[in-house]
Image (tube, rainbow, N blue to C red; front, side):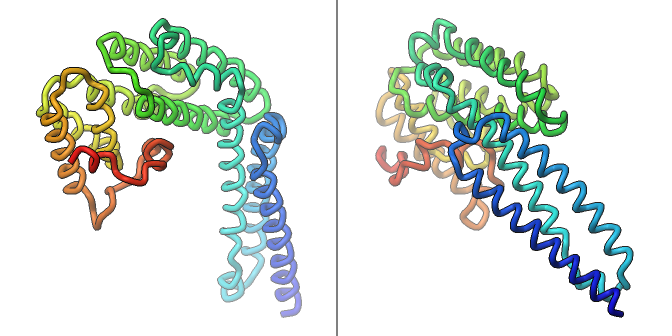
Length: 300
């Protein structure tokens, strides 16, 4: 009896030590990613994954040694998962190191401008990614590296969508052609590191928005938007409004009709007032979250 109670006490103490360690790690992650540094973040990823493995082994062996009625009183699973959550956040902070790089930021501000049209942005960007990936791959194990690459691709797509929606240049044929080239460049680069289906799944939203941007009639706008909602059910009608406003030659009446129809399509797709599921893109697009008044209202 006393042995059992002693084991539970030690188990509780160890659990608290782990929780305190995770809290300290999370506090560290609140610092700017560039100040923490790439190597330190990679070490944090490795350490927390190793801690998770060790904690799970400890949990398994300890629970096996306890009588069933006592084992049911011990909840160690959440504590173990805490290490995974810290590692996941460290992966995202590692991606932030790349996107906070002054050289990368200098490239991103040129998106959808002349240098971008001339092929001096996306090609240079993936070359920079390649340099970072070589470094990160040396520091972390393969499973974590793949997650890091996926997170980097997702952030790339979010940034490209955000810049498309905030830029003010009209969308022309050369814009559409360059958008398609971007998709090809990103596909060719990222499929060297992760599976093609995973890359296609994330780049698809860029393809969808390109199709939306090249629509030639109100019906085609609504058709493409309906297709987008199948893949990205949280894509708001504000996206359509912005892209329509960047197209030359669309009468204001038609623009209002398109946005209104897309608004109705979106509202009809909601479940209990919310999108059926959240995607990885639009909740993170700064230009949408910063807009207090839905853009479609400005056209009505």
